Image (cartoon, one colour):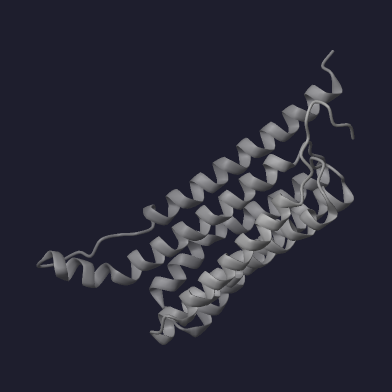
Length: 211
């Protein structure tokens, strides 16, 4: 018979593989939905007509990439999975699968409502990812040993960062000012400082140390 630990490892492994597949399909659909103009007279005319589509594609490519990196980092800390974690992860993947639709809305209209819906989708992605981590870390207790402070830090980072980055980027693009990007730099700098404090506060484990 298969050991319980082996079954848990297989469960988590299959969950991660399925998640990677959904992220890969979503990021591929971004490009598939882009169709070149029927007629263009020069390279500059081509890029002028495709500008909105290419910007939206590049932006969503970054959004999916950032969320995949966050997902990967979280699941490196998660040691097993259960049905509740499966459900939360499926909610997250359902939102990821909607990003190509949100991207198409951006290049088709690019108006205020479309941007609001897109930013809301990205924010909801962060919230769902945070719910996944919150369940694994605080309720299911399915993560590697770490302090409560580090658990809360990871929770806030994955919940707030995607929506904040998306909102600040759109702020700079819409207003034509660098302040959104400046804000992104400040947020990333603050997160880097906090991350270093978290790492510095971890106890050094050696072969002579005991839990």
